Length: 413
Image (tube, rainbow, N blue to C red; front, side, top):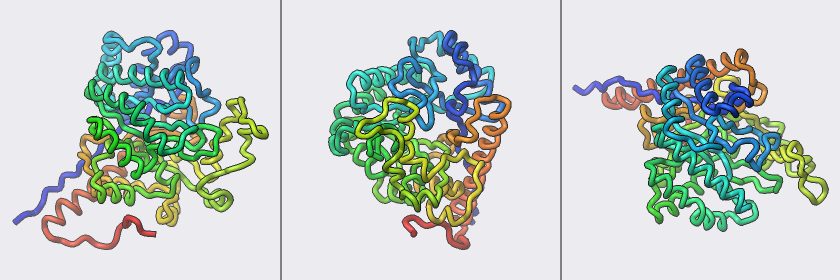
């Protein structure tokens, strides 16, 4: 008689190093770039993170987007002003061995389809440096954006993707890497009224982009690093997104996860709708966009008037918010991933991303217990989902015992 084996398979846990940008003071890490990585690895071991997602970015002196203009400033924990050599990689590997903290992937979030050619070339050269560092550090994936040229239509951006982005994927392929695209629409990335400034924002665009990649032999290099906060931002829920991918035969596209939530403010929706604030934002002066980075940041009111990022475990949720897709149902998110996607949970990373504004504290003593608590919550939720999946799908199902009750259903409103 078949009984089925109860073997829950949790996912792997990691944390994006942009969670603590000023862990190593700027003066120290500018003089000794890899000190920032060493200290982050030590910090990760203290807060219970078994792996890190190592954040790279153009140095503040080289970036075309000042931190003051960003909703969530990036971190150049991995400093690539100088080439990342074998000697530098060996130093980081020694620190990984000493702390027993691994590396899930590298991350570089920038606009790869930027309008200005000189800026775009600089970003592409930076991405190639990230690819080379990933190889030297022994990881097989880099996470980032596609981006958008806001001066072009979305269809024209597809053509630009084929011309400008596919060559990056060919470079990734030559190095044995996968490029995982985070799907944030980046509504405040510029002061235009464009809301979708990263063309890879939802399953429909993912499939269109993947078809282009397949024509050029780089379909296996294009994957999605799914972040449920962005689905909530657009009125979606994870189960429906995953179900759609499965139905279209693209359940394989999601290769990793950011663990970050979004809390929707019903008053903000009543005032502005899901398009956010469209006028009197403060990022324009008459017919001219502001040149002041602090004023340019007001473009993010397209998002922030009705939503706020959630660090997993920090938010209380009315069950009605789950049903309205106004908050991440973390347990069902992890169940749906196992039920609907083509993933191996034990080889899939959950990367905690900290962008909850009131808790973005750049103080080690205060931030450490916050991140430790979020990591513990993320681990516990996924272990519960792994246990439920194994019990329901691999034990009860084998014994022909029916499941009880009704869970969340895709497309239900």
